[in-house]
Image (cartoon, rainbow over all chains, first blue to last red; front, side, top):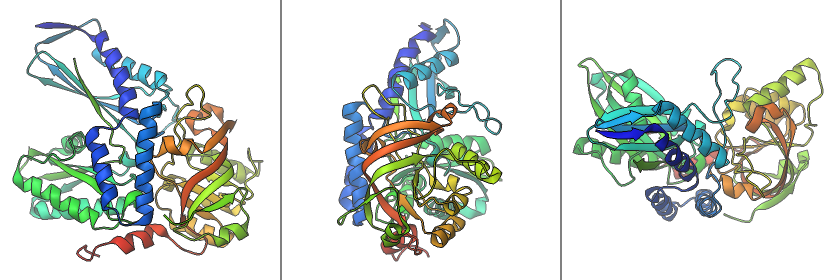
Length: 281
Length: 189
């Protein structure tokens, strides 16, 4: 059993919040560069050039890539041989977020009550924290700041098993096309298939953490990822919805076994600033 | 990107009339910022017949909630937010003199109709190019609703703020024309 003081997450979470919001992962940068090579629309090319220039400015001046520094979504995997001591892990994670958003000059975008006065909490907490127990004695924390514009373009549908994978593909392509310029294309599309109503949404969100270039281990779904990507890019939506060849950088499907009566599908879209940062403690 | 047009605020109807969907534009002058919460308050003031915190005539509203300014910067990263959330409020502001809006994403039919009727333009800026866009903002000052934080109304002085005409006052719509041009034939209609 490894003893771990929960306060030891504060500093790494703080730093990760700042880094995730200012430096894009290499795979996303590479995909955006490749997108620029494929784009034929002059407006689309100009848009991608601005995005590329923005990535350079953000990294060199430590400025957030986007003013919407997002909801701090934390995926935390705790090794079952870790004994957490020194207080509440959840509170320590939130403290890291609080400090990161303050010290990094990141925007505070969370309101306390969703449909009432909507008063800002002014420190970007509480974070959304997904806890999972895994074998081992480490703690793995992934911070994925999620912007409101792309999050608003999410959907869920309890499809019929008879709709099949082809029905799912049509549903996803149609949805991304309808979202148009709102989620800041070129986007990353996360698709959850299976499980239950609440779990399928989680799968779609988790799919967004995958590295661009990775594929679903099952060839059926890997092919579906490729087909949806191709069809989304054939819609012509293009960068920022203003027309072009590149609408999505990647499509990631995550699956889970499901009930004989069900075939839940969820779509969660990430903007081109597909931000995430992982630390292992 | 072809040659970009330079325009200066406040905008006249004549300047707006010359802009066409697809034009690259560099804006200099004053922009006012407002998002959902500030729009709600502006429209409430109009409905009550009260004075607005700034004169709408000829002005451009930029849909943005900037990040906090780090030391030495006039403003933090400041890219556009999604415009459709302001659609319920935009037509009445256009009726009261607003000439331009900057945001991202497509607009509703009532907004497009108000733009045609009163002569207004909608510019798209690149969402997520927020550090780059902030460089064109030389000065920022909160002029109303400081309690709204990022959502307060700010007066921005800008030089060569980069954007594209997405919807002009003649019905031109780059969100329709652009994708139509690049949609591949294999795609279902």
